[in-house]
Image (cartoon, rainbow, N blue to C red; front, side):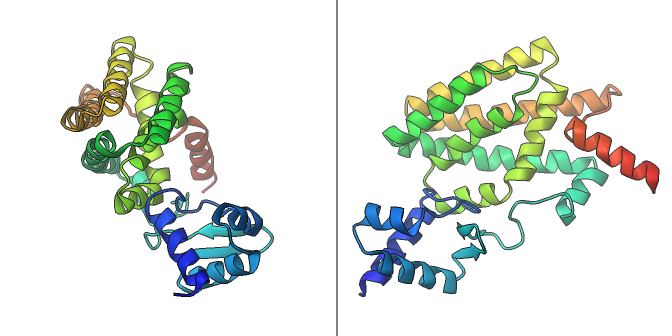
Length: 252
C-alpha cells in the first residue's frame, strides 16, 4: 500500500472514531505532516484521495473540512425542510425528543464502556461548565455535555448521525431550558439527572448510564407535554429567532 493511501486510511479512521466530526476543519498540511511523521507532499496526496471519495471537502480560502456523513442533514439551517416542519408542526419537538431518548441512551451505555481518559476529561470539563453557568442561559453547554458523551461512545455511525442533526438536537435542549428551567422544581430535577448521568458514565456503569440518559430525555418530553395539556404555550425556538419569525410573518 502506498504511503499516501495508508495516511488517507488513518485519517478515515480518525473521522470514523469521532476524532474529526462532520463540518470540522481538517488540521493544516504542516500539522498533519508533523503529527503523522510524513512529508507534506504525502499529506497533500492523501487529502486529495479523501476529497475524491467525498470524505472531505475543500472550501476556497478556508481549508479542508470533514464532509457530512448523512447526505442533506448537515447543519440543518433555517431553510431546511425539517426546520420548516419543526416551526409549523408542534409534534416535531416530541419526535426529536423520541430520537434523543433512544440514541443518547445507547450513546451513554457505550460511553460508560468505552470512554478513554481523554473522553472522561472532556465529559468532566463539559459537566463542570454546565454546572457553573446560569441555568436559564445554558442551552449550548447543556447540549455540549450530552454531545461529549455521544462522542465518547466511539460508535462512528451514532456520532455522525447525531452530529449531522446537531442543530435540530440543540433546539430540543433550548426548548427544555426555555420552558422548564425557569421552574425551580423542574430545574433542580434536571440538574440532579445531569449529575447522575455524569457519575454513571465516569464510573463505567453502562446499564445505569443508559437508564439515566433515557429517563432524563423522557422526563423533559413528558414535562413539556404536561405543560401543553395544562394550556401552556411552549417556546419551541430561541427567543431571538422566534421574534425574527414573527416579524417576517407580520410583513407577509
